[in-house]
Image (tube, rainbow, N blue to C red; front, side, top):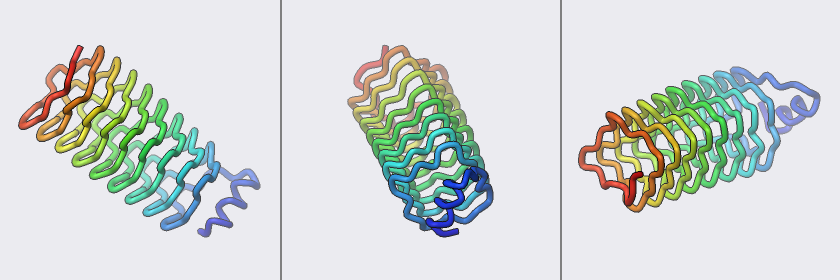
Length: 192
């Protein structure tokens, strides 16, 4: 599907784009609010500064996608592959990432608010300067992540694997960390 076809169909009221191939499209600053992209191929798509609220990406492939500065409120990434993606300064509110693959992705400066990343895999990802608030990340895999200068507030990090992670200079307030794994981990500046 081309950019023009997608935007024309969206303007005509269509919202279900499940299973479509949108790989390599440039959709910067697009408003695709309320769409369904279940099991769609969005490999290397660029949606910089996009309005991606209320979208269902369940089972979709967004490998190497660029969603820098995107607004992703009420977005579902359940069992999606976002590996190698760029989500710098993206805003995730009430998003669901259960069992999502987010390996070696860049989420620097992102805000993750009231979201659920249960059993998400973020191995090798960059989360420096990220803000995580009122979120559940329990049983996620954060091996080898860079979370320098992250601020984590009122969140559940139970059973997370932080093996070889860099949590240096990060600040944690009212965080639950029961049964988390720390092996060869650079620890946070403050945990309260």
